[in-house]
Amino acid sequence: NAGVTQTPKFQVLKTGQSMTLQCAQDMNHEYMSWYRQDPGMGLRLIHYSVGAGITDQGEVPNGYNVSRSTTEDFPLRLLSAAPSQTSVYFCASGEGLAGLYNEQFFGPGTRLTVL
Amino acid sequence: KNEVEQSPQNLTAQEGEFITINCSYSVGISALHWLQQHPGGGIVSLFMLSSGKKKHGRLIATINIQEKHSSLHITASHPRDSAVYICAVRTSGGGADGLTFGKGTHLIIQP
Image 1: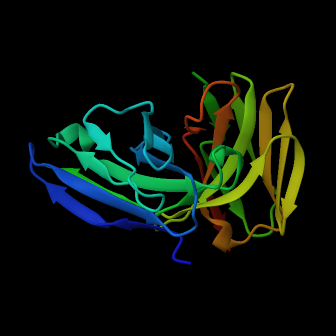
Image 2: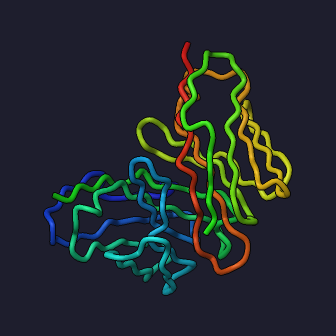
Image 3: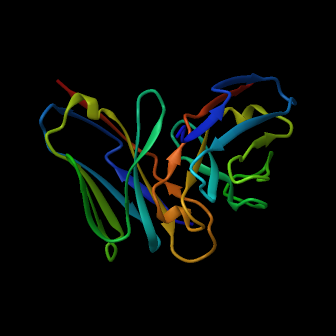
């Protein structure tokens, strides 16, 4: 198993550009989530999904969209990048609808810089 | 919103020392996770607790639900234990939602 994979590992954008961060898992987990990690702060939840076709907002959803067309994939879209979105982004997955009550598996992260 | 506080923020110790990292939270929870973030940035899950105590190798995690407090212990610490240790909680009630994270404890074990 590859676990949770994320692409790209690094990305530099200009203000106003859009892009999609990819996340995929091969463990058939129903719960998937996106977090951002900023210096001096804990990871914060952006969006999450409890299964294909079901997504919901987390703590800091503004400026981001998600979709879940398959169990395996959970892409995060930046609609119009802003410098405040400079961060490290982590995708995570967990087993079952109550995935938070099981071990969480994290992707390697995407380091995004918005100029 | 659940507030998660970790202490200490930074800890430097000598190889072989017994290490304790603390986590406290403000609202009742249904699950607590301990995570390790390596210097390269990768995050791995160490424990998920809802009560009592768990042990894996030299790592021990305990939780006191009444006191809203958890501890992570490392016995016979080693330089390879140097990492950021993160506590995260799942607040009781509500929908699936996500985890609320502490800011992490940066641990350095010197040889």
